[in-house]
Image (cartoon, rainbow, N blue to C red; front, side, top):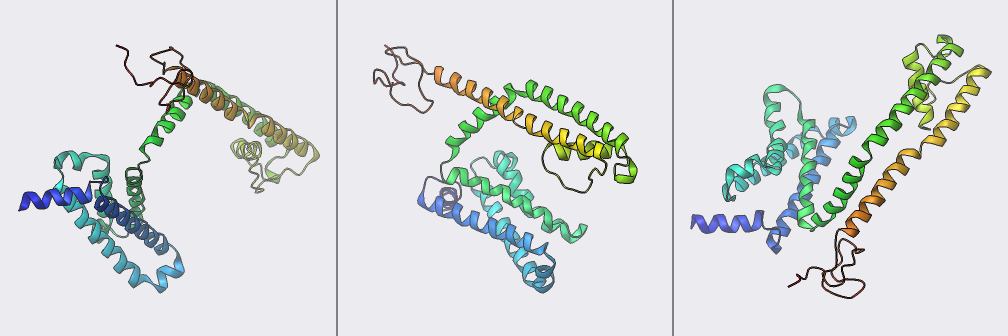
Length: 272
């Protein structure tokens, strides 16, 4: 009886290939999002004041729900210790721990926002794991371009230091440029075209330097994008050439291709 109950619970809780498992995970995701919304609302003063009691009840209701769910996961997991040490197991514990620690350590309930990590289960529910391959391609491209990007950022840092030093000399503390680090901050804000406006040059010479910094920002802002795009293109070409047709030996196929675009042979067919 106990073994049959564990198997049924395992099918519902961990079995995303079953209809009951999908419904359970979708309900779980909805509850997770609702609990995160409650935490966010509790950080807004009008809601925290007017609905404090209801938000507290909701928080404990969510915590009890997630505690029971975690207990059921540990109970029905085939390898309990493996689940407890897994990524989702650790996140499941972190999702309920702040509420209980808040009883002894004060208000740390805002850490419950970590529950949003549990929404990552939707990758299993909706079968989106295949898209992780695309993420791996992007990561490999970023790793391949890391040296070029590092050189680019070093160059930008030197330019920002030069412009910042010039603005400190030209404008001075009376116009808000109280130090070279403060002037470098202004330069970075200007080069990145953010332009907070908290510090602005007043003298004609300072405005000329500011104009040069803005033009420099527009001229270099596309550099890292070009570097990453080039590496990404090369990575995609490498993936295309990594799959060869067993019949005609052509290798310019998409990663998700099933048949050869040239001879129609099954790409996964083994040559005898």
